[in-house]
Image (cartoon, rainbow, N blue to C red; front, side, top):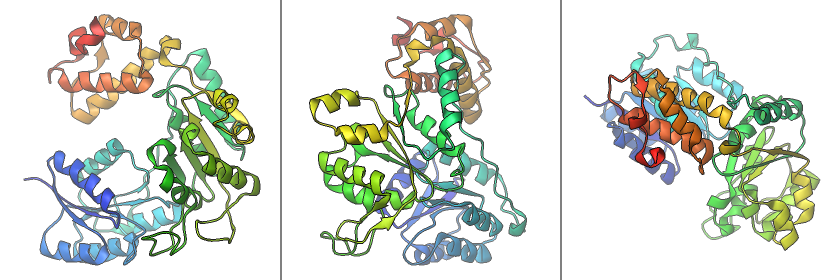
Length: 388
């Protein structure tokens, strides 16, 4: 019988995305826009797991967790928030939460946590639970280029200095940004990632700096932006080269004054944020062309980390391929343990226009499509286009 999951979040888009993702996995899914509706649904329909946001208008996720567990002690609960702190995580675990995840949430990580939660009975003694230890993210490779990158990360992680990460898509720019965060004294504060290219120009100002009630049509309440959400921690601005001129001016002022103003307000709000930016375009060329401010460019590029494409560090391909093989074999219950020399030769000779991300997707596909009893990944398990 399929497990039933209750998704609680006041944002409709998040509910829809998670509902589709878990329904596709075969779960029975219910959704609620707040704590009171969630409690009613739990009374009406038995659920195995509740996935809930922490910050909601009618009831916090922590309060919902405590009230739900009082009436339904066998319910597993996973909390999600864009404002994660260690004290909140500890309180959640003491109240019986299975895990506490910080947004933006990687879907593969979330699926794995959900599977683990549904395999483990909910504890009858929630105060005995301890927050799980997190594995620090790592950048895999032993090539000279990777060693130099990792040395730079270790040297600058503790500084407040702005960092610009450049490299083609799929080279691991966000991974380096997370390493900078996790290896700093800000590690217990939020890491907030924003894809500047994914947000329309008309919404980007509000997304970054927030807005006060009445600032625009439909602004019924004050809204905090990503800078405030990341206060004390790290803000990662991906595809920084795509921000429009007006936002470039505002961003420059934030970096100079270390304060923001919400849209519709003249009241400055002090912020303590370490900014890490990334781009796959040539910002210097954009400066020369007049589409990107030179003063902002120099502010962002106090420290520059360039990630080479995978084709320029082919000696790292076996390490990466074997890492992904182990990861996806475990996640999919496959017996694959190694990659044949012939298959590895194909991987090392490929052009990898999509870099590490493409390699990861290829290995995942090969693992899933290989025979269930296979223990060695063979050339025929790889996509035909890769074998040409």
